[in-house]
Image 1 (tube, rainbow over the protein chains, first blue to last red):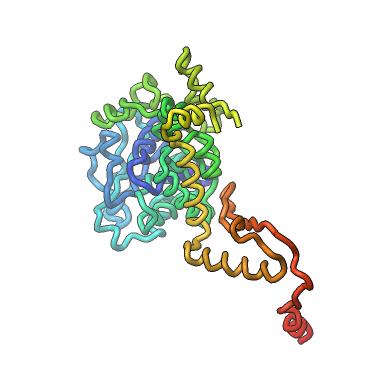
Image 2 (tube, chains in turn purple, brown):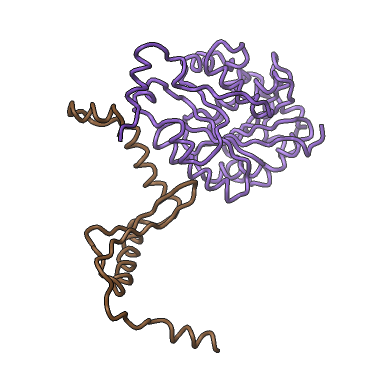
Length: 272
Length: 104
């Protein structure tokens, strides 16, 4: 496929710990499984973790640093996933690279990847400073990850402002770590509250799921081992929607049948 | 207000927190997005009220100038209940200078 049709997607959130890297790893595997040649680029040079979540930490020889310095070829630095050969990781270099890395360096790396891949997923660092701006420079479109919490939504809003000013689009939203029970009790921001405030289309909705922790322990993203868990299914659906497939979003209030759920819905009725 | 809110109120419990979260977020985002600090907003509010009160008598107790945000667009919303118009209308201040500028 020609480089022009490659999609360069930034995965960002502003706030740390909301699930950027987990989404990147799972989405990368899911896209690869669906037949798309996918590269994941760890743009978090300070605190890299994408290698660990993909279970590739022991197979890194070269990084983006050597590629940029032209002391190795891109193919040498790319770490191919054993079970999903359509997926390759370009590891982040040494944290000291942050001292000299420029947006143009990231553009250069992304362009090199674009010659070999259909998707380039860029895992952005937390924050809105230099590291984030470098990562943003390599992207054409973005996925903003947030959770239904005030701090995460506020930080996502800052990031969306920066993406808008750089002309990155489309920007789509993944709402992570949703707890249906708390939403039903109105003790958590609702899905429409978040999409209204951020004014972004919803690309995916991921329920809070303990299996995510289990999968990171093993270094095997949920999308790799089938779709037995709710979060794994949600990540696979995000990949399918990215590919243009129409997949209905799950409704967090559904699946809760019976009397308790009915009372919960009754309690939400607006009476005045 | 929802049924849950009413029950919570009757039982003397705190209302559900999601709505509080949404309101607090909307307020803080309006300020974040406009990049106006509260002090500057306060000053602008005073000056707007001052200008408007030259023309009409406003109810200062009820009046409010706030930032509101919807669909990523932030608007300055002034809600100023008018007691009555001031008569006679004061002479416009800026018009002569404006004319000068235009003719020159």
